[in-house]
Length: 86
Image (cartoon, rainbow, N blue to C red; front, side, top):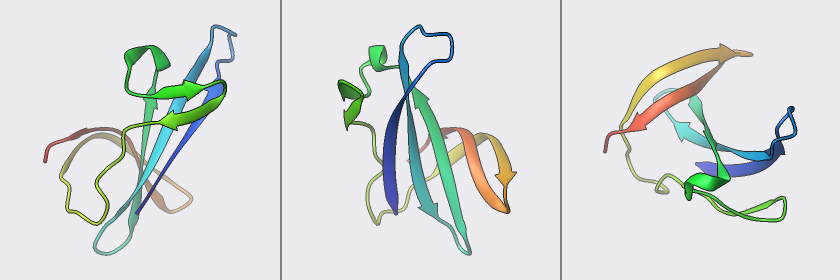
């Protein structure tokens, strides 16, 4: 449904990390997949503190995730760790 990326500074002052949030439509409901990336791994590109490129899920296509860790926040399903299967 939507993908958003945000660069945040680490609390210990050693640099920045990027959090990517992908909204996934379920039947019924909605899930949010939060993925954390280090700019050094090459999956995200930064211009200063702005994220200019990040991994996105394909729009309006079916995807299969293997969910490894999840939680419920304010009655919302949040995927903390997952692998994209197909």
